[in-house]
Length: 293
Image (tube, rainbow, N blue to C red; front, side, top):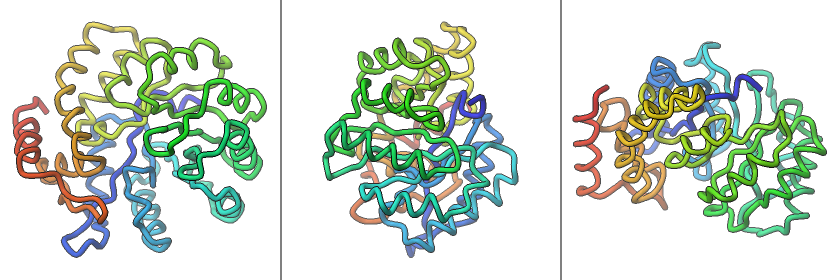
């Protein structure tokens, strides 16, 4: 899918001081990402703190992003969880016409076997009217979707078109890239190794830091896709320190501090997450102040 090539960003949900959703700030983040050269937007991923959003708040986020985007970029919606029946029901009842694909995480907490993961995504595929990006993030799900399971899914279900691979394991990423079906996309879910994955044959990234530095990060990925390796790595090395910083005390606390430093949104997060501490806040602010925007 051409619309999933390049840089997508997993949008944050900005909050006001009373922890209500700041829709104006969310519109500003959408515009900042679009103007910065991002290729597509991902709504209600992990970075959106969707675990602490009510159903009404999720609808508000979806509608705000759709309105702010105004048809400019392709949209992907996060539809995942650890109750297969609930996901299937949502896919059958939600209007997915505004979206080019859904992003669906491998079930968390339950720790299914590889067969359980396969059967879960079989059900998701059969229920989804739009293409499916499966999402492997063992650090959050407590189980690793093995390449053999990914290949089974990619070969058995035509609407499973891509994987967001966030195991942080370059050897596993290379195995996916080496043996994947020709039309199946491997998308990095790890900002630090997104460029190496692209240079090895990846389609791009669904990024956290990309929404804070859209100009530099999306250009880095485009340079990688165009095999302009030296220029791409200049941008990688420019951003590396901040990539480390935004995950140092958890996501999305770090990227929200970037937006606070940019003056685009406040850095409030909902419990059990907390803001970054003053030391990290100052380091992120110094980075933002000194980077060539």
